[in-house]
Every structure is written in structure tokens, then in C-alpha cells.
Image 1 (cartoon, rainbow, N blue to C red):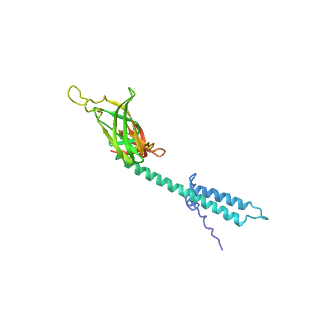
Image 2 (image 1 turned 120 degrees about the vertical axis):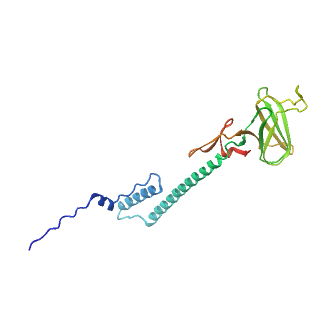
Image 3 (image 1 turned 135 degrees about the horizontal axis):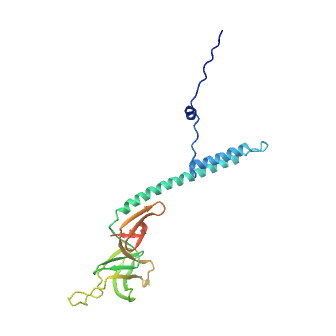
Length: 237
């Protein structure tokens, strides 16, 4: 009786690779990476424990609880980063709608041009009497005081025509206007005879463009006042 030997079965390397797939390496700092590190340490600890003094169940439970805590914190951080990115995207969209609009931010200067200027004040608390005093930085002298009377708490834009005394006229019979340029402003707010410390002056500028990145978030670029954040804007005009 003759014996016929079957030819050996040849298995391709591609088939072997598809069956014996390698575990993907988790990204450094990810939740999966931290879990892998913890489990590697735990298995190593179990393999090398003293047979006469095995790992106590309470210790094992405690370590597993620590893994759960770390995993939960990492997942929370991942969720917060996702929310942060979504918020920045929404904030950037909102900021682009402000391009070309005037804004008021905390500042102590006002720019007068051809008898036109805009500034503002921010009152954290109401006041019985509010005055905005304008100073010419070239001479150091106060050139005008704007009396606003009693005002409740809030943010108020103020239009200024640069005319310190309407009764004084030029040769053409028009009120004399101060020269174009930058002027200093300060606010004096009183309540019950005491000066308030939470009253602030606001400067005006126009949003020219918007910048955004992961590190610094959304920034508004103002031609005169520079770069500011959305949180610095007190009012959009």
C-alpha cells in the first residue's frame, strides 16, 4: 500500500499579519496610554509578588480605584479641551461680526478730529454726581469738564464736540473747537459726598481685524489701542 503525502500548506505572510495583528500604540498622554502603563505596572507587581506574602485584596482594590480616578480625570480633561475648542470657534465667529464696528474699552484717552470724538465711562455703582474732565496733554491743563449729573450703574458712551465754551466764537461766528489730537480723560463720580473708586473712563476705537490661535484665543486688533481680548470690550457701538 502506498502512501501519498499531501503537499505542505503555504500560508502567505499577509495572511499571518492579518491574523496576528499588532496592538496599536496609544498616543502619549492619552487615557489609553495611562491605562496601559498602569496595567503593565500592576501585572509586573503581581508576577513578582512574594508567594508567602501575596498582594492584599484591599491594596489591589485601592490601586484599581486609583486607575479609575486617573482615567476619569483624563477623560474630563479631554472633554474640557473639546469644549474649549468649540467655544473658541464660536467666539471667533462672533468676533468677525465686530469688524468695522466701534468698541469701548478701558482707557484714559480720547481722539478729537474735526470737532468729533467718542469716549465713555463705566460705573460699577450708581453715583449722585458724575463729571468727565478732559485734559490737554501738551499743556497739562484741563480744557473742559462734562457734567453728567446723577447716573445709575452701567456703561455710557459719550459724544464730544471739542467745544469747551459755546459762548466763545471765531471770526466766522462759530464756536471755537479745540485742536485735533489726543486728549486725556478722567472721571470723578461721587455718592453721598464721597468719591467712588470703581468709576472708569473708556476709550473708543474700531475693530480692524480678528486673530485667533489655540494658545491665546481670540484677539481683536484695534488700529489705535492695539490688540485686546473679547473680555476687555465694555460696549459695542
